Structures are given as C-alpha cells and as structure tokens.
Amino acid sequence: MLDFALLNTVLAEHLAGLGLDPEPRREKVRAWTHGGIERLVFADGLTLIHKYGHAPLAQEAATHRVLQAAGVPVATLHSSEVRDKHMTIVMEDLGEAERPATEDEVLELLLVLHRAPSPPGSPSLSEYTMITLPDRARWHLDRLQEAGRWTALAGRLLDDLDKVRKVSEERCAGADQEPFGWVHTEIAGNGVHVGPKGIRLIDFARSYVGPVLLDLVSWGDGLDRPRPREARAFLERYVDLGGPTATLDRRAGLSAERWALAWLRVWRVEWYLEQSAIRFADQGLDPTRQALARRNMDQALDLLEL
Image 1 (cartoon, helix red, strand yellow):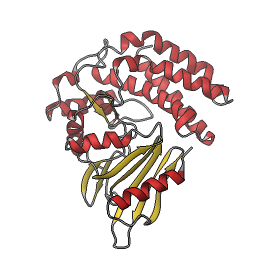
Image 2: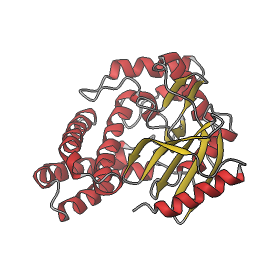
Image 3: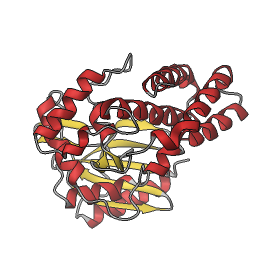
Image 4: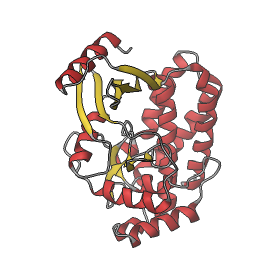
C-alpha cells in the first residue's frame, strides 16, 4: 500500500530543495493501485508534474535519468528519490497533448531510444527471461486461483502456457541478438507526447532492456489480430532510416516480424496476469483482462505454429 504521509513529506522536501513552495495546489491527473500522477500548480503560474509509485514501479526514476543523460527526448527530470520503496519524481510539465504522433516521428524516437546506453542493473528481458515467461505467468495464475479468481479460464490457459514453455528454449533463440536495447513497451499507447513543447517520450514504468523487435512490431499492432505484413513494412522502414540490418533476420525458424509478434503476445499474457495479481489488483477488471489474455494466448500459439 502507498504511504501517502511519506510521499507528501518527500515531495515537500524536494520542492523546498528546488526553491519552490512546498505546498502547491495539486491536481489529480491519474491514479492506480501502486502509484499516480498529479499536476503541481504554483502561485506564479509555474506547473510541474509529480509522479509517485511503490515497488514494483519504483525503477522509473532511474530509467528516466539514464535516458535524459543520453539525450533521449524526454520531459526534464528536476528531482527524484526512492525512499522506503516509494518513488517520487518531479519533472517538467509538457502540457496537454495536441495530436497523436506520426509514424515518421515514432521511428525517429525509437532509433534514438534503442541506441541509448543501458547500465548494469537495468530492468531486462533477456533470452533467459523470455524463456521463463510462461513460468512467471503460471505463478501469477496460481496466486489468482488461490484467491478464487480466474478459475474458469485457468485450466486451458495453464495447458497453453505449458505448450509454450516446452518449446520456449528453442523458440526464444535470437532474443539477445542485435537490435537489443531499451524497449519502451507503450510506444503504441501513451508513450509519445506531442504538445506545445514538442515531441517527447513519456511513461517508462514498464520499460526494459531487451529485443527491440517487440517495440517495433507493437506499432500498428491490432489487439483483434496480428498484422505481420504491416509489421514487416515498419521493420523495413526502421532499417532504411538507420536501424541495424539484423532487424530483418529470421529468428528460431520464423520471420523477424512473426517471431516478435508471437513473443509480444506471450509477454502481454504474463503482464495481464501480473496486473491482476499484483500491480492493479481491481477484481472488476478481471473479465476484460481474461479476454485479453485468452486472445493473446491464442494468437501466440498460432504465430509460434503450435
């Protein structure tokens, strides 16, 4: 649970350290189980964004700092701290979004992001971690079943996770090969902000270092069905603009786009289960997440030719 007394204390200390009023007006932007975002409004008209969170969402400040130092276009981070597993970030307010990013803008951002350095200790999705994604998903599903949740879906989902696990060592081959770097994970969602201050990457709560193919194929990917042809075209444009030619190499007997679309879906299944069990444990969202998990599992099996 979030310790709001601690978060308020830390925020006031950081604002004072920046020479600002430690008690500005606070406007809620978004809140969830383990964190939230609010706009800080000061008497002189200055506004800043305060983002806070609790483990396992406390890594974002470190990731943001690394990317900012590497010249990745992000909101300026003014102050941050993790205290007692609680994260506090005070950063530039980019204003309201004006429009969605274009494909060209996204490609330019991804080329910069994927080349940014990744220091030791960064969140990682290596070949080994990908191999064990079905195991992690099973663990979350077991916890949900113990709580009397996800019971109707569990049997078939467990069987399908076992199918993927039996071939995961073979089918994860190529995960650590180039291109390998920062994966945003929300590039097709709310990860790009186009506003009065220009184009910025935002929201690194789920970012990790891993096979960037998963980032690339997520752009334009539909939840209704995978679109390998469109994904291939995007990969080819990425290479044409300077991405490594290895982006287009086959992996584990599959085309690059089919391989990435499959493992993106296995990763999503594990994510939906983790959300339900740990991060955003609102039982009212179970039916939606179950439907998403089932759809992504079916698509992953088809893409992996299982």
